[in-house]
Image (tube, rainbow, N blue to C red; front, side):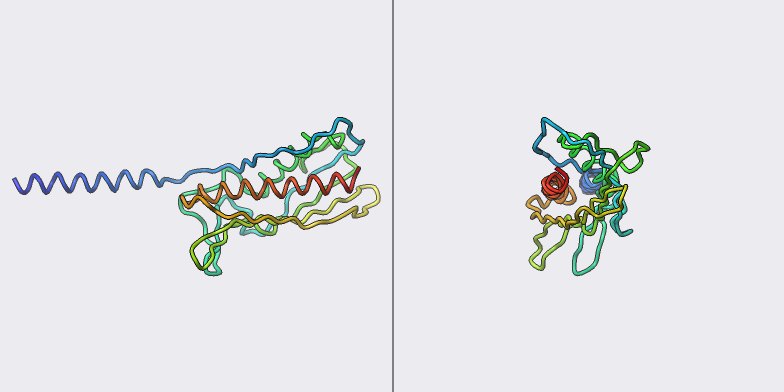
Length: 198
């Protein structure tokens, strides 16, 4: 009888571990910031191309990375569905197009003619842990707006946002904060670029 009870307890413990491991399988997260940008009723004649976003190799990956004790590490059970530079390029292009301030906003791969190019550089896109165990995400990009015909730099700006991670449920919590920080940066970008090119 003892052997039967021991066998049942062993099976229950093993099945419990199996359930836990199943819940920690890798999951793909998508960067989906909620954006409410000002929409224009009349647009200018500019065609703006959003160039491919340059980024350090450590950020040009589908890994969701965090910085702890000075070292960058990836989450084991969470990855991005697309690399941050690629997804950010799409998000910026779509957000600026939806505003209708420009005649058209196209991505860097488009063959359409354009008179302006926006050159973004991704400098920070990571979760940072503090000494007390809390964390925040840091999204930081530098932008240059260039007129193609003359090669003139019409303006440049560095935009950054930091948001505390309030949900500590692994990668899911930092993804929520990344969405908020990304929305902040894109909103600030739209205000800046619409002021530079009226």
